Length: 314
Image (cartoon, rainbow, N blue to C red; front, side, top):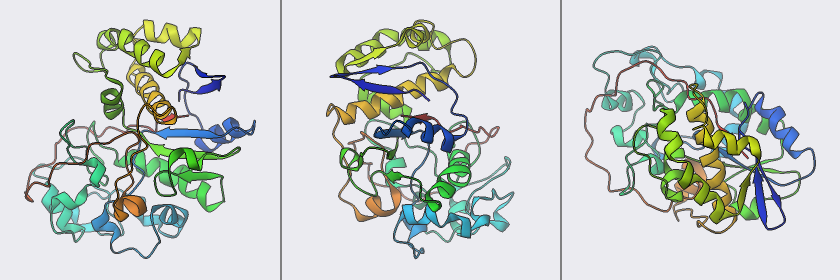
């Protein structure tokens, strides 16, 4: 997580730290009675085609009642056990896996129904991975499983002072002393919003190092100053270890949240009841998806499962 606090007309950002226990992290940040805007690099919402069969009022109510459906977060080994009540798949790579077969096992009409509106390709970026997919470097299913089951569901059921954007209203309207407002951020989307372009993969320290001038420029526009430790991290390309990419993503998410709070980006929410009740949206995103392509039996990408741990970004 990367934390920034408002000081006068600007913000002071600290260097990234491990999240630890998410509930304890949020409680600690709220202990002083401040209002907290928390960006999360994980899905907040469910596809409308799947949600059409639910009786809850929307996604927040679904999370509060998640404890009643313990099998929902189980990752299926094969399609024979996939169902609307156990949608996450697969536990390991299987040659010939297709989105069409996964969609059919869930009772959906085609692979396009696996994705939320905000996951689909726009004119500005390619599509993200479908929510229920749990294999490969770009999947987000395991982050959802970890966060929903290990933190958000239990916390909301216990009455934690959280509000979920955009389901419960605009970002600034939800902020209140002693309350955390949670919003979904997406690092690649945040880079586009901030005007940062990388010449290569952000997994490489050298590429991250080359982003330093653009990062500093974005921070200056938003009135964000870096503490000495964060400035050293930026100047070093966020370190040589594998967590360097996570530290960069954490800062990108933080700047995304601040850009909306400062009015540099609109608090855009599509005028779509499914988005506002079930699917959610990516903070700061204004581009709507391209028209859905015809359903196909396109194969899922194969490869080692990657668990992209939650990036909590106050």
